[in-house]
Length: 234
Image 1 (cartoon, one colour):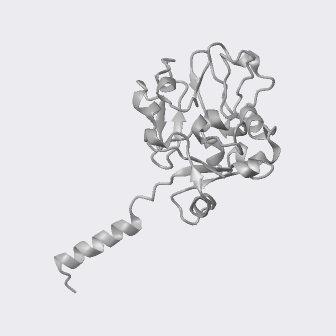
Image 2 (image 1 turned 90 degrees about the vertical axis):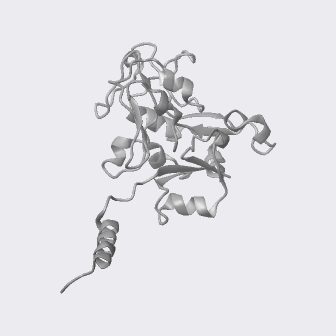
Image 3 (image 1 turned 45 degrees about the vertical axis):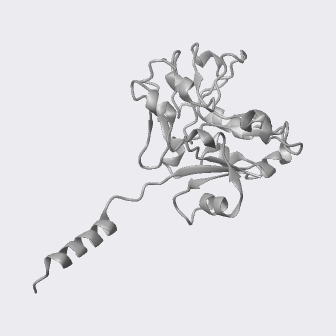
């Protein structure tokens, strides 16, 4: 049976679509502030995150290390965004794992990079030279610098996650080590009102994609063009 060149090329294109490279994922988080605000004093997300990743509690606020923290609504989104109903309300903040991360562009050693497979913005502390260019480039204040050895400030050390050293930058990784074994980020798992929803926003059937389609969402400083992948719902 003979096949024409045109038919062969059509079959080749179909096979490439069927068996080609897998579709890249785009991991994202949606935070329902109405649920979060049921207990405005709750810090379970930060406690779980910091315990799982050996984040030290340094008493000097100028030297603090934070992966998740809370800010007043107007500090997170601007005074003009804070009406009477939300002014002063605490908002959970973390690395936004941006679509176009400015931190990656300025890192001279490749210590921070964006994973092609799922969009996570990662950190390799062993390659970090402590220049802090990434901190200057990040418009969200999501990175912390270890001005001193952080280990003396750890109440307990989880051996499952490496500690850091003086002179390196660190930040939230969306719990990449937990995702690798099929688990959810620690903050998502422990949130009592289930205010945090995490998943592949590029998959229309995922919980986070469905939630973002159904509810009004907004992001921090969208005009900068970084494309944050942390969304907030009201």
